[in-house]
Image 1 (cartoon, rainbow, N blue to C red):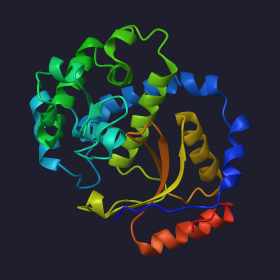
Image 2 (cartoon, rainbow, N blue to C red):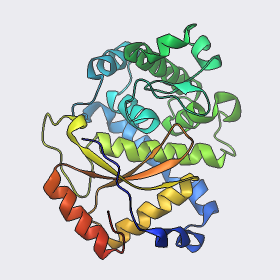
Image 3 (cartoon, one colour):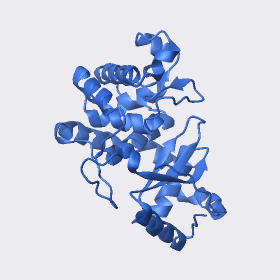
Length: 263
């Protein structure tokens, strides 16, 4: 159940000038610590839902000795599991493999192969494995390089670009969803990811605005289940997620009390 809702929340456009200090948002030293904690405990962490292409993810995780939850988090953040996704930067498929350079580096020489889910997921897993080796197992730096390219991320982590840092935090948020670490909803075992509804609230041109909007709404209505996605257009979409119609209607009332109305 995937849906998009229009809204009359034009008030939101003005809240961002003071809500986020971009420099503080960009550094986020806590991310490295959070990923280290994940790495230390990942063997005991299982996905909370049954996700699309699950057989492909399990096979790639076993093949390259990677945590399945990490692969799922990257896939959710990159494409929301859409096998035909294509970005404005010419990245393709579930794991958004860049064509042609990264794809050919990984041994894929036909663009059409990137739209085969298992091939794409295998390629993304191999690339992550390669980056983790380059950065001595540091997931934070490996993800920064997955987004920006290893040539732009120093192996000692010095002077990581702002965009690479937000990406690490972005994937960490998706990891928490994959693991069921939601403040508002505990997943039922064997729940299909495709059964979780999504309603678009607002779309932004910059990631820090999307993140600030979520933080603002969560402060006003902490019971909401919110997330954000980087779409192929290069925009950032904030969504409300819900298990069923009843949860959607409760969330709509909470949003209304926070000053945001779903039409």
